[in-house]
Amino acid sequence: MYHAVGHAPAAAIRALSVSPEAFADQMSLLAERGFTPVSTAHLAQAWRDGAPLPLRPVLITFDDGYRGVREHALPVLHRHGFPSTLFVTTGWLRGAYEIDGAALDTMLDWDEVRELAAEGAEIGGHSHTHPQLDQLPDDRLRYELEHCRELVAEQLGVRPVSFAYPYGYSDRRVRRAVRSAGFAQALAVGNASADPRQGPFALRRMTVRRGTGIEEFARLVEGRAIARAFARDRALTKAYALVRGSRRLVRKASRAHV
Image (cartoon, rainbow, N blue to C red; front, side, top):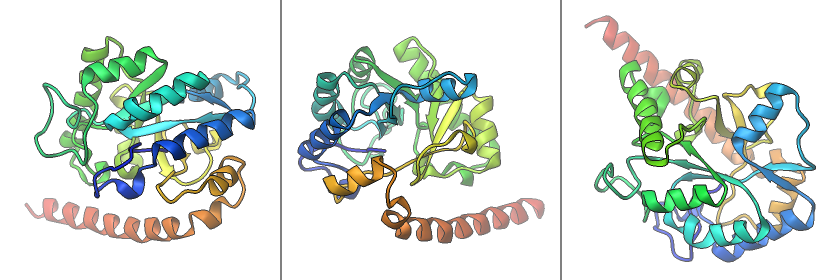
């Protein structure tokens, strides 16, 4: 799971960015070790149908829609012939639907998103305003999912079938809503390898950061020392899950007394 790719990303996204040089080295490693990138839709459909996957399949995904993905990542992906999945936050992309001041850094515009799609990237949904979906009431949740899907379909002429949860947050209600909105599969974070037993609406990914060195990257894609690499992330995720659960209970209680 990637976010921004750039030399000098904004401070708000720097920790979750990678340099162009690091990204190029990581893609070269995948090629040298015989990995075969696939799109999210390809992976999920193969697991549904029981169809064989290519040798050593791997997902390359980008969240949000930062412009550096087109500028720095696309040439590398093109050189290797690698497909990828770009999950766009439609209200952050530059253009007619842009929400002023919402994006964390310079974003793609819709022409650039179309260019990525033409180069073999699957374009998926990532909500309209990038909220914590599990904290939203039902009507707002439906809007975030359906509006995002409608805008992607309007701009690209194809309805997106894959979704990525903003911040990786979801619960049973959110996953049902994603399915009802017309998406066929969805990705969380989880910092673990994806596995068909997780179900098509809770597939996991591993975070690649500014501080992810090439040796650590190699261990992660080979499936080694994953738990150790993300031990802190998992502890924080569990703690924050309790906080979000408490918030939901408070809101339910408040609505019950209205």
